[in-house]
Length: 384
Ligand SMILES: NC(=O)c1ccc[n+]([C@@H]2O[C@H](COP(=O)([O-])OP(=O)(O)OC[C@H]3O[C@@H](n4cnc5c(N)ncnc54)[C@H](OP(=O)(O)O)[C@@H]3O)[C@@H](O)[C@H]2O)c1
Image (cartoon, rainbow, N blue to C red):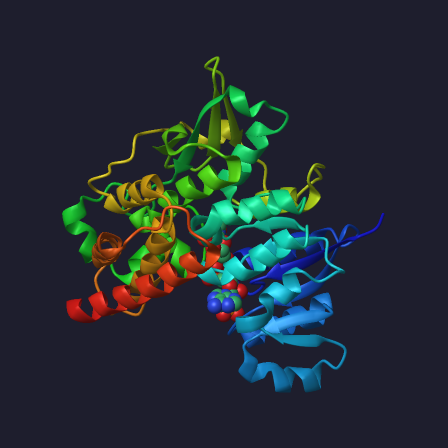
């Protein structure tokens, strides 16, 4: 069997490391053609030695040293060249596991090059999902989502007629503040927030899970990936995180995808699709797990989710502004420059100031993103 050649963008992050675990477990099926990292050079060095990629992107300052050490590897500047890597001829699947807006250019390049794209990153789809999906269709690229909720929907929709879908139910574990009244949210430190009860993830998405902005992003991501209207996407809080999402059909039937909380499952399925093969994950034991609970989200406790729905309804450049302001605000919270509930305040302020463009070009989105970042930074300064 010819091995599939994989590019892992963001190989030093939580999803990147799990992707490499899946690849290592199935060395007969996959090989690593390219890796990209940013600042974690120590881990990148280990990964190059172990997986022998031909192409590697990293922060520009370290390239000279690495080039001396690894003569056979071609090195690229991660801040500039991830799109070039995503479009390389010798690559079959591009796993997009970088955080934030940095994923936009490589996603677009992979779509234009007609690749199989396995996005864990949701921010690129939030910013410019309509443009990205149009490029995917135009160039016969294929998107197989890695984000566990989108993977669940993708799996429930397989072989189904899209006209038969009434709505999808996106599940949310609710994060560490699920049962905490809003008035007490600011008591939580960065350390408390980063201790997510169900999933081990990078810092940005863990904070977004605590505000539930992450679920808001997923609402927009699902809308773009599956061509749904916002009214067709319902969020359900499900603390056990066993049901990864569900699709309800017009006859009232609901299909769900269940599994253990281990990202290797959706990652592996994206790499082997449409095949299913044994994985190294533990099996789901429903009898041992007790009961499964579902509830509607409390939008007063989690106003960021309401804000995301609002941005999705406005559409145009509003979701990109939502994403950019959130990225700046979360970074400020992580650096200890502001309290937790200020994240929502910053994003709300920036959205209020935004003048929307309804049918944006990519350049409109990039400008809206840049302006939102400046406004968010200014607002954070004023708060301080
Ligand atoms: N973790 C999960 O379970 C999970 C689940 C679903 C979806 N996702 C989504 O998947 C994406 C990755 O999440 P994660 O938790 O794996 O994040 P993470 O652990 O923070 O890893 C981020 C990766 O991106 C790289 N990176 C960061 N900024 C970059 C930049 N400006 N340019 C190039 N590379 C950059 C990092 O490199 P260095 O570390 O070398 O600096 C690292 O390899 C996010 O969009 C997230 O929403 C994650």
